[in-house]
Length: 137
Image (tube, rainbow, N blue to C red; front, side):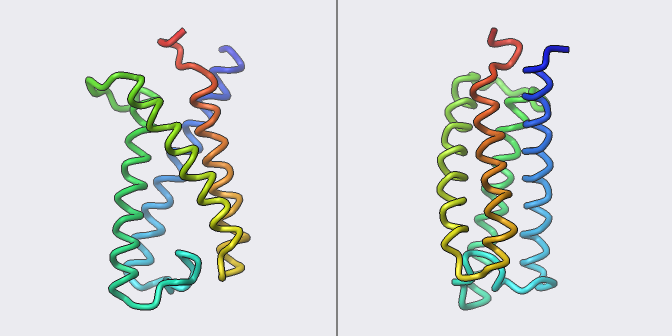
C-alpha cells in the first residue's frame, strides 16, 4: 500500500478515535463524575452553563465524527466530496483556534492535556485535505 494512503488512513483513524473519546468525555462531564471546572478554560460558573456548553460540544464532536467518517468512506451519503473537504478546512481553523484558546486557559491541566490534543486534531485534518482520497486522484 502507498505510504501516503497509510498516513491518510492513520490520520483518519486518529481523528475518529479522538472524536469518539471526546464524546464520551463530555458525556462524563455532564454526568457529574468529573468536575466541569476542567473544561472551557475553567470559565463555566453554573450547572446550567455546563449543560449548555457540554451539549454543544457533544453535538459538534458528533458532527466532526460524521465528517471524518464521510471523508474516509465509512459512511456513504449522496454528499459532494467538495462539501466534506470544505468542512475539514473549517475543522482545521476551529482546532487551530482551539489550540490557541487552550494555551490561554485558566486551568493548567487543560493547557497541558488538551493543547496537544487539539494540535494533533488540526494536523490530522490537514493531512486529510493535503493527501487526496484515492477516488479523487
